[in-house]
Every structure is written in structure tokens, then in C-alpha cells.
Image 1 (cartoon, one colour):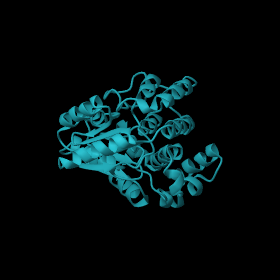
Image 2 (image 1 turned 135 degrees about the vertical axis):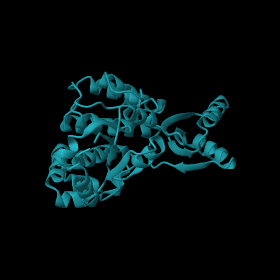
Image 3 (image 1 turned 90 degrees about the horizontal axis):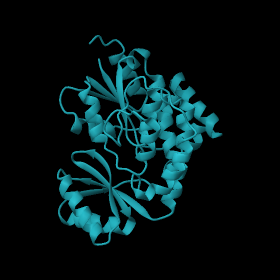
Image 4 (image 1 turned 45 degrees about the horizontal axis):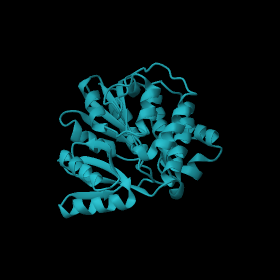
Length: 311
């Protein structure tokens, strides 16, 4: 079986995530314990159990990365052997790159610890918001964004998640006005629980700090392809693409479509929820099987069903 991994992005976090895995799986627990050493605290109790900290970008990114990497560590080797590619949403790309061997766990964790801090600082500089727009005519939405910008609004497309889901970001008051405009047209709008306008020029200061930070790193060759949100193609120059990612829109739909073109029989989402699995259903309909691992029960199910797969 050809398996593609989906790695969670920010917004999926919730207090207590992974608790049953930590209590019952040694490989998962070892990953979280390593995060405790790197963070200098009891990571499970002081980060993963704390709603207030998980609401902050500087903690949420390392939390999701650690949980997703812990789940990967807990997968049976027979399941891992069937992985042929990976796609992560935003910070999930760092998880995907670590799984693919470009980064070590410690590298990915320490980079994300700094990236989260840089993005938190940039978010604190100005009051900004992100909203999800649920509509299948994204061209029309983009036209309205441009019209609003010509009228003086500060708005940007930020995440092209599926053909029917677009996330936009901007100044708080401008986003509120635009959301009302859309709702008046009968278009559904959902606030996004993040602390800043990610993947837009609002993150320019963070991008400059991240570029200097990534210049200190070296990466290893990828063992399996990782498909970029920025280019919708497989990563080539890893560090250069990660530098661009922080201020450019994500194209999860394009990245997943590219991975699917290489041939997939199943996807497994590793992280706190099933958001990317829902995206995958919209992007890659048909016979591809879908799994999501977020707790002990779902881990055991995936290991049982896929470890002895003979397809």
C-alpha cells in the first residue's frame, strides 16, 4: 500500500491532546520526554495540558510538532515502510521534513520554538485576524478582496485549503467589515483561532528573523518526497522554500494533489484532529482510504489494519 502522511498545522491544538498516548505508548512518551528536555519543563503537563499556552503561537507550534512526531514514532515499522510521501499544513511541513529525514527531531523542535516566537512577536505588533471563507467560487472572493484593497482595506489570501475553503487575513477591523460583506451575500464565514495574520506580509519581520535563523542550519537529503504548500510541488531547496513560506499563502490543496498524482492508496493524518483528512476528502475523492491518528484507539486501529497489509 502507498501511504501519504498528512501533518497537522496550527489551530488543531487542544489541551490534553495525546494524554492517553503518553500514558500507554513508550515511543510516544519518549518523544514528549525529549521535548521536555529541549524546553526545560514538563512538556506534557506544562504545555500540552495548558489551554492558555496552547493559544499562543510560541507554544502551539512546538506542541503540535511534538505530538505529531510522537504519533509517528508510535507507528509500527511495517506501516512506516509503506509511506511514499508527506504533506504538512504550514508548521506541519517541518514535521513532514523531519519524518522524511531532512531535519532531526531536535532541529525541527528548536527551529519551531524560534519560529513560533518570531511569529508571536510579529502578531503582537498589530491587531490582525484570520477568517475561513466557505464558498466554491474562490475567484469571486479574490476579486472582492482586490476591490476592498483598492478601497483602502488591508486584506490578503492566506490559505488555499480546498477548492471550497479559503482563509484570508488582515487588519482586525478590515477583516470584520469584509466578513460582514460576505455574510450579507449569504456566504459562510468562520473565525480562525490563531493569534496573527500568518502567511501574509504581516509576518515580514518574522520572516527576516527566520531567514537568519535558518541560515544556521543544514539539511539532509529527503528519504521520501515532501510536497510544499508554497510551490505545490516536491521540496527541492528546503531552506529557501521554508523562508518563503512564512509570508506567502499556503496551497495545501495543490500540495496534496501533487502527492496524489504520484499514486496513493491511503492517507494517514498525524495530529490532534481530523481537519486535514476532511480537506483530503474534498481534494482527493474516490478510492483513497483515509485514516487519522490522534489518540491511543486510532493508533492501535491503524497499526492493526496497515501493518500486515499485503497490497
